Image: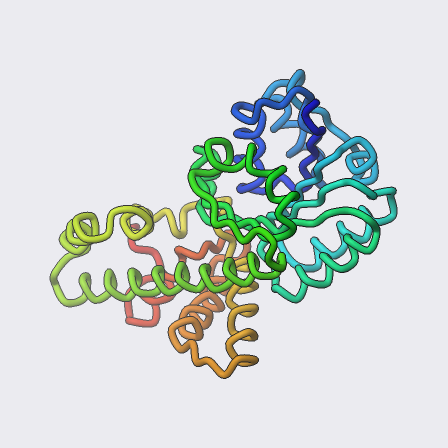
Amino acid sequence: MAPQLAWLGLGNMGRGMCKNLVEKGNLDKPLILFNRTKKRAEDLSAQLGHDKTTLVSTIEEAVQKADIIFMCLGDDAAVNGTVDVILQEEVEGKLIVDCSTVHPDTTSANDKRITEKGADFVAMPVFGAPAMASAGSLVCILAGPSPSVQKLLPYTTGVMGRANIDFSSQPPSKATLLKIIGNTFIISMVEALSEGHTLAEKSGLGNEELHQWIEAMFPGPYTAYSARMLAGDYYKREEPLFHVDLARKDAGHALALARENGVSMKALEVGDAHLVKVKEHLGERGDINSIYGAVRAESGLKFENKD
């Protein structure tokens, strides 16, 4: 008999991952949903079908009913607080899976706490934008005991993701270490695109001309971020795809790891400084792609590229 699954945390990524679990995961029981903001869970349940999902009002209820509990939360404090609640319940024999982006030390500490209570733990952060989560094309990183990782594979490739990076039998913290380092590439990519487009505009080359080159040379994330910049999505969007606070949290973790290991990450420092300007200008609407506006303003242009 298939296990009962529960999902805690329904942000942009979590909603897309749940959608694919329900539609392609061959679940024989409704997916249990919990979110701190209840309406978000209610809206997702209505979208996916009330016969395919079950809403619970507390984390405790989700843990009591589930065999595998997924978490996909915004930051380390939220993850630690949720684990505190989970471990108030009987968890022996259950599998707890953290899809959040947190510091590797947070992962290690929670791995120890969870396994001491007789549960299994796997870290499974993912790479990809919310649209990729909805399309089931994420890259999943899995680290933890091999038998536990094997339990999750039916829900990754071909369901929530297009590929796995499998660290079976390795410490769960290795997955979040890769996730943090990987996210520095995204910040650096957005910084490079922002600087390039700003120079293309001020030098007279033109943004559309640069975008044509980006499309030809770097199809995929570079082209997608470039298109969003030129469309003004970076300041028009009401709900960020990659919130400025989360981007800064990831940058902070990476810079701390770099200091601990004697590594210089100058590009990341520049990107993080621009994210500070993004938060000042856009507040809660700030997105990682809004770095473009900060670079523009620093170079004597308006933050917004369209009237």
